[in-house]
Image 1 (cartoon, rainbow, N blue to C red):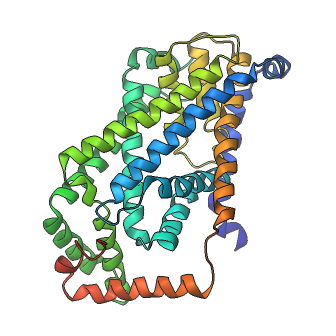
Image 2 (image 1 turned 90 degrees about the vertical axis):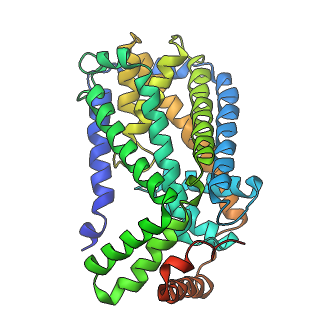
Length: 359
């Protein structure tokens, strides 16, 4: 039972091992270690600074998405976003996304299901921008299918990924722009599919989730979310660029955009905590495709990975320890109250959802 209970953890570990095998197979580890030892680590400082600027823009974007539910200052969102990063880095299955939704409920009384909707919207826009980075470099992508050591056709993965992300985004946009028909359709599906004993609770959670999509009802707001997402990932690519200067190779900023896009799409694959392997193997493959020696590409990718992992994880832990999540009877009582509100709202779900979460 214990093994089955943690099957996701074991699956992630196995996948990470496979990716690490492809990343390190045939590598001269001594040469890679020498590159790590002689790196100019002073370049990590501006890289980390630029990265935290991107995290702050993430906090502003989340504040923007949450405005229809509750207006929370960006300075209050930044610690929660940092805690979410910490959770993603130390737990499996991006559990940090759920953690920050729970903390938002704990600190600002925003329903978990509604805030999770905004988190999913963030991830969809992130995926769209990452695919945009890949499509800007489609000519280079063609070289990443064999000689670079990466398994499979990146071009095909990019195309299928684009289809999936844009399809989900379209569904969310339509649900946001036409809330009444969407709620009627959801109500009909839930009434037909979900067992009667949990039907009302499920419907309440789903409709609460729908309220988290309100920020997408305006095309201008959706465009603003897209623009801030581009800025976020350009800041992160800036970190890639600064860290590159710590090593004895040089590729273009567009090449690093491509690397950023591919490695972050790859990290959506289940893996061990911290995206071990799923970040490193495709990152090394991209640089190898641009003619960077594999040992140098490995040293850079591993140092970059550590520079992305440690600072935000330490900051997230600091913010969490300053004001940890409340446990026990208080949270249990609040969760029960939210569930009762879900059930009570089913008298007329089409009338009760849109405004009940506004301050």
